[in-house]
Length: 622
Image (cartoon, rainbow, N blue to C red; front, side, top):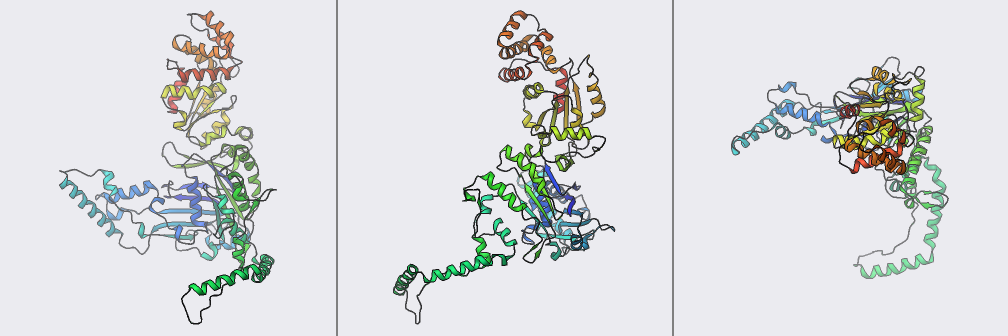
């Protein structure tokens, strides 16, 4: 069993209409910061989270509502022209559809099926106005009256000054106190989920700010290690309890402790007020501890040198934390508590891990999920993890360019496994740590080689006076001309602005390649631009063969090849640079020359002319 589809409406940054995402038994969720990855896991927790002590954290606050939904509601209330009966109070809705049931799981969700074939069941969390609140219209009328009173008061006291729309909206309350949550199964709002069955479906959520050390040491608090120890049969700890009871007998008979008891009792009798029959004797007790109390005193050690985890590094403890949770996801019967299904959400699995360890974790964590009783959801900002995990199970969240809504796209979605096997194999091979950063970007530029990758950031900054980092743009070097494999991902649903800068390859066998790319992939979000000359470097040289651009090129050439560069400068003199001759000097040193040219362009403010196709491309990126 697993959550195969999730729909979220009006919860935090997810608005209306519904955000919908299909999920798999193992899913990697990626995307830029503040795009909704954490909110997605929190939304699932509102249904399956068992550590939230029933109602308390299922009750939302105003900040949990989508900002635009609240603003739209207040705007309607503030507008007296809108009939009261037409105003709808916003609702938060989260629908989790489940599939792939084992027989025992089907029995648990038996009242929540949504199809006759009994292959899909659904649980919905709804946070809405209480059904018994009948004074919605009166509330709106009262809000409008209070607003009008404030408007009139301000107008009189400040010589006719009028409220702005934002001021009017800010003076409208939100009736959060009249909201309540409901959990219902299937498609029937009256079919409330029976808590008896609901508690058989659980969620473990390791958030990004998890304190692994705190959760793994001995403590009286209700922490992760203690909770996992309690999942085992408590009778299995009876031998430990027997040993401790023997220790208690030894404590009672210890000579030193008896001496202290006597001395303290005598002093107590002297300093205490007289009471008839008062007993001032004391004792020491390692009282036959309850098993639960014993477990609170157990801490973890790690490694061949058994030191406490509070002496370990953050990264090591994070791996220990994750391993401890994953080791416990298969148990169904725990001290009489039955768990039919468990979803594990791990936020930023890479926390505190160096790049090599991130890659190693990614290569192994997917293999840990092998049973049908659980579902594993990871979120990540790590290109090392993204580059290693299965593309089939990787979904990116992004903001739609037109609507501004949050959308999702599985990286291999709409790619035919048989017909496009070559593209899939290429993506799996080459989406390494560097190239997978495109899935954390708002805009992407695909280029052929290292020269473009080095120079485009500084050329863009000169052209727009802003950096690629500022606009969330990544330059991806495809190491050749394999643009189509990456463009298929964008065309099929990862709708971010994508620019392709490619060589025209004039008079070569591949000179029609750029035109073919334009024909197949050009769209409102994809622009293909080809060089005017045959290659990127030649266009740069041709555009700057004289004037201040010439001086910058020559300076970069001299830093790349001191002897040949100076000789070339002398031969050229006041003439224009010969493009082919200059290119022949750098052809085998493209990366070195590009690096030196980028330094020159960063340090000097003199005019350097960009080829027209690059200007068109950078203007498209924005």
